[in-house]
Image 1: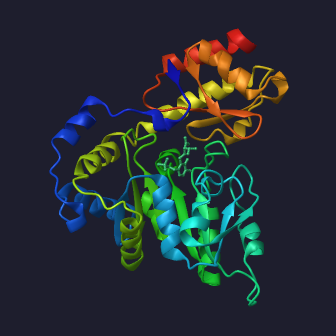
Image 2: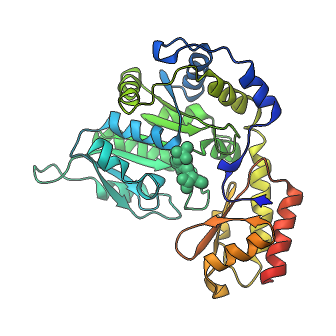
Image 3: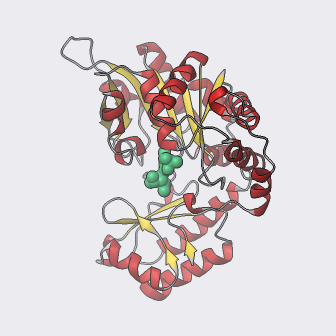
Length: 341
Ligand code: TLP
C-alpha cells in the first residue's frame, strides 16, 4: 500500500524508537522530565523565543496560542482556508470565546493589505481584533510558502496596530528547508509559533509552541485546565528531539517526490493541478476535468493500492513523506496513468 493521504501517517523508525526507549523521564507536571525540559529549551533557542511548551498536537498548540493571546469577545483574523478555521472543530469559539474573521487569500497566502482591511475600527459595537494567525506552509493552499517579506510586512502591521501575531507552523520545517530561512527568523517576526514533530519529521506525537515567558506560562496553565498535563512524556519528547536532529534536511526529498508526481499527474487531461502551488510536499488535484467524483477516484486508486485523501470540494490531496519512496511515487503515478491516462 502506498499511503500518501498525509505526512501524519509516518511511523517512528527503529532508531527513533531506540531514542524513545532510552529516554530519561520524570513527572512533567512537577517540571521534572529531563527530556521534555531539554526539548523545550532547545526549541526555544531554535525559534529564538524565550520559552517553549511541548504539546500533544498541532491543534492544541494553535488553540493554546489563541487562548493565551485573546479574551472572550475578541476577533481573530485567519485566512478562509486555514486549518484553524476548517479543521479545528470550532475550538476557538468553544475554548476562547472568540470569533474568527476569515479573509480570502491566494492559495492560502494572505496579502498584508487584506489583513489591514479586516482589522476592526475602534467602536464599542465591533469585536476588537486582537490576533492575526497565518499558516506556513499552507495545507489547503497546496503546501504553499509565505514569502518571508510578506511575513515581515504582516509582522510590522501587527506591531503598528498592537495585534498579536501567531504562525501555525505545523509544516514550518518544510518552508525552512525549501527557502533556507532559519527558524529563528520566523520566530523573530511572530509573537508565537507552533511546529509539529508528527508530520514530515516522523515522530508519533507532539508539537511545540514557542513565545514569550508570560505567554507560555498562560498556555501552560490552560494546557493543564484542558487535562493535558503530561507525566513521563519524555519518551515522546525523545522522539521529537530525534526527529529534529535527523529528519529535517531530508524533507527536500519529499519536495522532489511531490514535484515529480505533480508534473506527471498534472499532464493527465483528467486532472488539473495548480503547479505554482507545488512548493513543498503537498499536491492538490482538481478532479473536475475527469467528470468523476473524488470519492470514485479515491476508491479506484485504493484498488490499485494507492491511498490519497479528500481535499477541498472536488479535489483530492497527495502528501509526500519519508515512508513513501521515489520508486513508490513512480508506482503511484503509474496507477494514475493506468486508470485515468
Ligand atoms: N493537518 C492534518 C489534517 O488535520 C488535515 C493533515 O493531514 O494535514 N495545522 C496544520 C496546518 C495542519 O495541517 C494540521 C494537521 C494541524 C495544524 C493539526 O495538527 P494535529 O493533527 O497534530 O493536531
